[in-house]
Amino acid sequence: MKKAHQLEPYGSAIPETEMTKIDPAHQSHLYGMQTLPYYAPKPVITIHRKIVQVPSFKPIGTLAIDLTTEVIDDICRNLYDPGLEELYLLTEDGTIVYGPDERKRGKRLNEAWVREALAGGQTRGHQSYKEEGHSGIYVYERLTDNGMNWTLIKRIPDKLLQAGTRQVTAVNTFVLGCSLIVAAAAAIFVSFWITSPLKKLTGYVNRIQSGELETDIRLTREDEIGILARRFRLMMETINNLVLREYRLELASKTNQLKALQAQVQPHFIYNALQSIGTAALQSGARDVYHLVMLLGK
Image 1 (cartoon, rainbow, N blue to C red):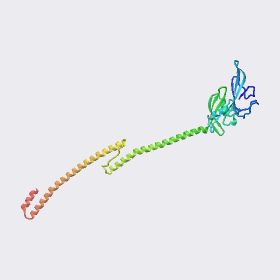
Image 2 (image 1 turned 180 degrees about the horizontal axis):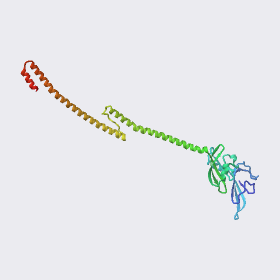
Image 3 (image 1 turned 90 degrees about the vertical axis):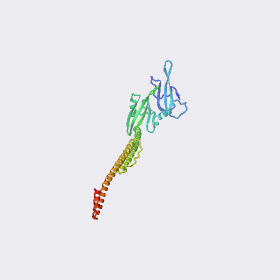
C-alpha cells in the first residue's frame, strides 16, 4: 500500500545525499489513515523513495511501500540449517531484519560479536566467537546496494565444524581399515602363492634324500620357482644317469673279479684232484700211474 508524505512518518528521514532508505522489519499499521480497512498487523519492510521535481531535483515528497518479509524469509531459509546454524540480517545499527527467532525481528541485537562484525570496515570476512556454553565462527558480508546498508551474518558452532572433521576422520579410518585388510589379504595370498610350491619342492627333495631317486618332480609354474623345479628335475635325471652308469661299471668290475677268481679256483681244484688220484695210485702200488699223474699236474 502507498502512503503520501503527509501521513504519520515512520523511521528516520532519508539522508539528503540518498534517494532511497529501507527500514528494517516492523509490524504494519494504519499509519494515521483512519479511512483504510483494517488489516491484521504483519512483519513488513518499508522502502522510502524521494519524489523530486524535475529538472531541479527538489524533493517534494516521499513514497513509502510496505513489503512483507516472506520473500526474505524464503531466501534466508536456504542459506543455513535452522537446526544447527544461525543466520541474521542486520541493519547498520544492529536491528534484526531476519533472525532465527521471529519474536526478535525489528529489535536491536546488542551482542559483542555483532558490534565487532558491524564495526569492521571490510566488505566480507569471518571471526571466531566464544560464549558461555558454546563457541564457533561467524562469517559476514555487507549488502550496500540501492541505499541499503545491511549485513548478513551466519554463525556456525564448533560442533558442526567438528562434525565434518569427524566424518572425514571416520571415512579416512574406514578407507585405512579397508586398505589394511586388502594389504593383509594380498600378503597372505602372495605368501601362500610363493611358499606352496616351495613346500612341494621341499617334499620332493626329502623323498629323493630318502632314496627315491626316480621321483617325478611335477611343478608346471612359469615363474622362477617353476624354472628352479625344472632345473632340479634335469639335475636329478643327470644324477640318475650317472648313478646308473657307475652302477653298471661297478657291476662289470665285480663280474670280472668273479671270473678271475673262478679262473684261479679251477686250476687249483684240478691240481688237487690229480694229486688225490696219484696218491690213490701210489697206495695201490701203481707207481707208473703215479708218475704219469704227477707229470700231468706239473
